[in-house]
Image (cartoon, rainbow, N blue to C red; front, side, top):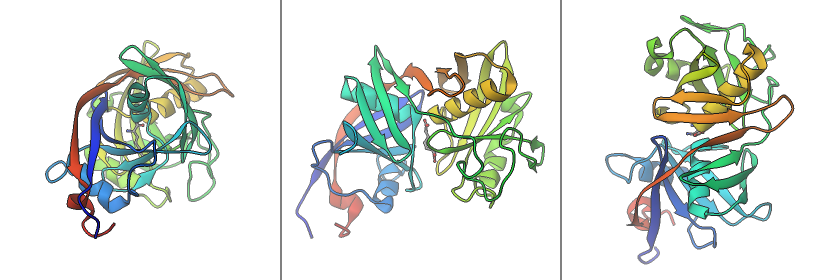
Length: 276
Ligand SMILES: N[C@@H](CCC[C@H](N)C(=O)O)C(=O)O
């Protein structure tokens, strides 16, 4: 068993989607694992967050960002955390994620992030079998014919009259875990009015969040590609607004705020036990 090891953290959020960020860019931190991430994310017995973000050295970019959902699962991308990390880093950077290399540009009070190129192939989402991802021939009660887009992580998008009339807390988990999505999926319900998008998201591995950056990117891309919406587009989320720009064949630019809430430290063995 190791001796005491105190780990500093920064608590941050993007539009109320909140993160515990552990800065191991100099290689100083012990290895993160799903059970430790889940314990730290617990809002009653841990620090509490939607995503645990671990920064590590990288051979492919300026540093690496690893993303763990509150359920402990490691995932490929997180738009809001990317802006938070841009704020923390304080200068432009290329960042390796398991969903691809993204580019951060800090702005006053937030950041612009190049989230890379969206993918539309059914194998890219991934789906369990071939189908049209512009209007999928599937439904869950009143939610039907979603679009699917992978923006580093997998999303389905239902365009509806009123996203706030959808029982997303009940339907979200059914869709997230449907066998059609072998990697599970993030579930977006959106409406379009006056050239802008209103969006709510059931996040894979978390549940309802106040905002989802990749959800905003995926929904904006689907709206531009399939619904005639013009880029750039404002996406209204429960926690606030993001601006998303995308042209066919190009990369997605996401602009929005990020905030540091507080800093602190914890004892590694309180969360990792004897695992290290
Ligand atoms: N909150 C995030 C998305 C985090 C990952 C997502 N829940 C997944 O499982 O893919 C964002 O701002 O993009």
